[in-house]
Length: 259
Image (tube, rainbow, N blue to C red; front, side):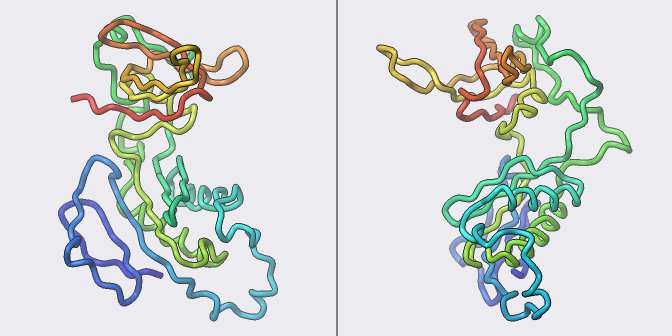
């Protein structure tokens, strides 16, 4: 397992492998809005020589074909680790030798209601509430902490080492979503109705050619359409333009920070 190194200036941590030293040129880390927390490290599989004969005879819970790819079985294991820590795994990404896990606290809406929509005042530009979750109270769990990220990182790395993920050498990042969080799932759009977002989606360009369009607009509504797929309605605060997108046509969406 990697050893923690000291850090300061914000709630951020770096994990280094045994014997490694921080780069003297890059021994500082700027604390920004996203990711809120960072836990990472390079892992060399240290379990090969410690497996007992009985353990080796026991079938692995995950198939060996998952050594170099992020499979549904691995995602399920990681989601269960996050859940056991009181968090929810909202996104996993394996790219360029880096495995990124994004954690959040499970969302608890106030009560089952009709599909989320903006009021007339909100669609005209009045800032909406930052969230539709239950108000803070002694019974409301806090946001994801640095300790949560470290706990999930330790437990996830143990499982990944066991199955020799990434050939035993990779970088693991665990963080919270940040203020300008990206929206990944239909439930994210439903949760943040009323918030301003930067959305990139498929559109039709000149002469009918496929194109992409990016707008900054308010999430006016998010509800299942006729076919059961989520439909997201965007409202431009400046022009009053409103248009509805199918969830499958959205390529990327990220909340904008409103001051």
